Image 1 (spheres, helix red, strand yellow):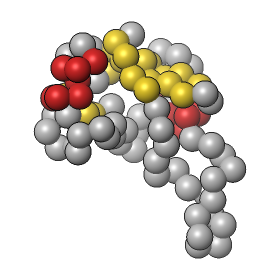
Image 2 (tube, helix red, strand yellow):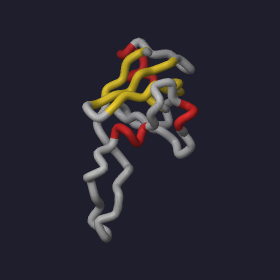
Image 3 (cartoon, helix red, strand yellow):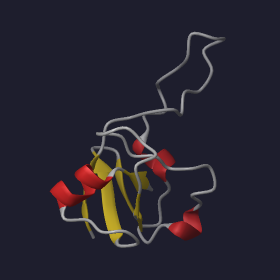
Length: 88
């Protein structure tokens, strides 16, 4: 899970520390990667954040509403969602 230095500092999160990411749908625990390669307010989970990467037994897909559909053939939309984050 990648996010920017200012956001990490405000939440008390350091590079390679465990973080809890959650919303009303679920909770995931992953390692933080603090970087300036994402925009402020954005968390980035690269493809490859698999079930074995999470201590909560869920992947980031658990945080996305499965009812959300794209405008192209009503396909699944797994691009973004709103979450909160804290040290785990």
